[in-house]
Length: 355
Image (cartoon, rainbow, N blue to C red; front, side, top):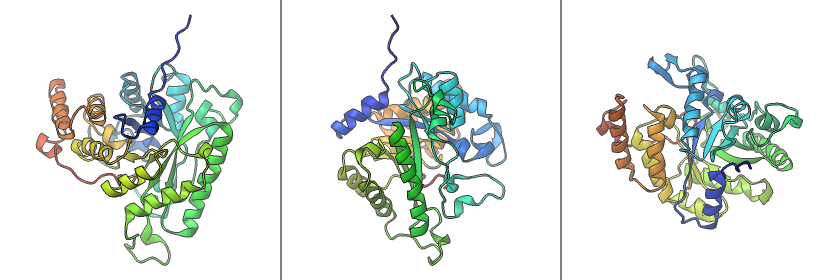
């Protein structure tokens, strides 16, 4: 008699959060999809490497970090590129007997094309583009006849960047509508990422530096407006957005309890930036955090995520988590990037992918 695979923690927690927004549950995702943005630098610096110069870790080492975090069951979702998901989910079956849900980045808008050297796409108004397809995320092939839903991903991230420009924003939202229609027809789930505007001063007719008066309301209102015409069958299962501050986050979380608010991490920052952002966002209504660079830049990713999990579950205060993390580094004989005092500082890092 074969044992049943474990239920996915994403589904269990999401059901409880929707039923009772005041519950203690909090979803964590490791965003290991940076190879769709940064190129050679995506896996992070190798030992002795210098920022922007390298040497960098290999994609194989990057995937080893994913394997370790998934096997430790420290996150609820592992977000990957389609090529990484093919290796780990489809070929290796890493997620078959795991409570962790695999997910694939389903589009790569031009503002996340962050090649070094002469790259300048991130400063130009974002344009929609998708490298992969739903069938490829599920089975690694364009032909869905090869599909094996027990191994590939049946959850994807779709990303929007709106720039307060009717022509550009209509093009972006049209791409999202087309994706939603295909996803609904094929039973593919998704979550929605919405970035702050990336190039307001590059839009014709706008003054240099001009931006909406209230950038948080601009984003929150667009989320609400964009989803108002979407029936339940086509809706995202949760949001991934910059932390909008206490007031707007609470308003967005309370507007429609079926729309679960999640935050993105932005740049790496200090350890307290990561732990404090989760604690503060949860306090004001967010119930999901998706961190990429904050995890990937950590001195020891398993220890970092283990303590991040304790902070997210309200078992440890953010500042105490920083101290505990430094204690773990000391036990492992790992030299921290910063002193404990410097690592307890806070800064703003949760704005945009290329910020």
